[in-house]
Image (cartoon, rainbow, N blue to C red):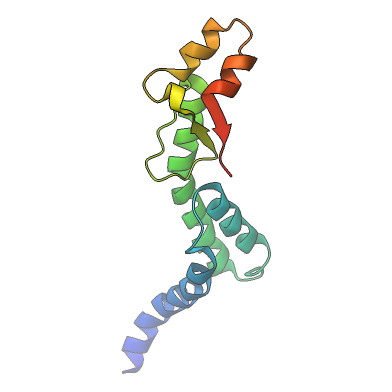
Length: 121
């Protein structure tokens, strides 16, 4: 039994950390969730190296899709957000076409930009 306890102990520590983190982030999504994980890593679980490692891992993995959406929006004007997690939403006028092209046709971009995108609240 004591050998088994030694093997299970690291997993128990990880599960204990996740048990404390999940209730805090489970209702969050997108940037709000990423911000909360980051806050936890620098405040609530400070001083626990294992907790920081787990939170860093979660933040790296969770931020990949978000950064991909951000990059796509910045460089192509396309917003692909099937779960409504991104901070930017397209208006009805851009759902069928390329929003960036619409902005470019405006020669200044500001009027079309406002018509193409909205900040999600």
